Length: 260
Image 1: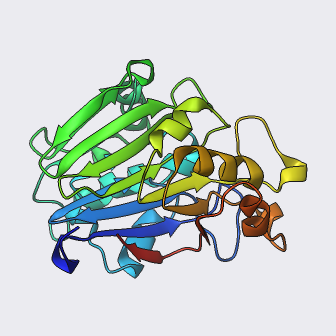
Image 2: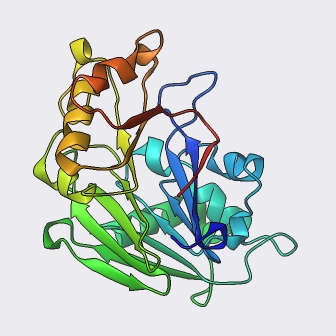
């Protein structure tokens, strides 16, 4: 990075899960690089978190979903509904990306909400990703690498590589897998799920020790733990993670803001 003007800003809009928590909303991560604004996942309350963070929903350029579970996509209909507003809505295109099945997922939402979430083609386009193909997207600000994660058949992790050399990796929901370590290799920031304490480790999700192992194998510079269930309250998840990883560890909180 050459200076503050080139820096990447990251906002952890939602550090929680689908289980209600007084200070943790469901998953959402915003990343700004230059004039471009990304949103990864869109759990319930994301629109309000964007506003609290001082970000405008109509400034979003891309929204990428890691998978289609409700806690990661619950505010999508609200986002599209707001985007239709004659006074407050969008004036520039929004691209929504996700695994194969995204178009069908959107069609089913349309079946429920009808015209109220319909945007003209010049304002909305969908980009489906084959998780097994490990593709990347060339973007004006760099490239976005996608890899399949060990959660559902339609789970994708994202690695944003900017033209200035910054790397932000976002696992979404996943269990330990080689792809997750590859996703975060040498990343400046790895936003990694850490759902449960080690003694409550659940298939399809990570616990602190396993998140730390991924970070160590990836050689990432900073690890940000997120997707924290209430069972993590009162547990020193960072200490458990440090048994595997000796880099900088941050335990996510809603509206946490970082600069790379």
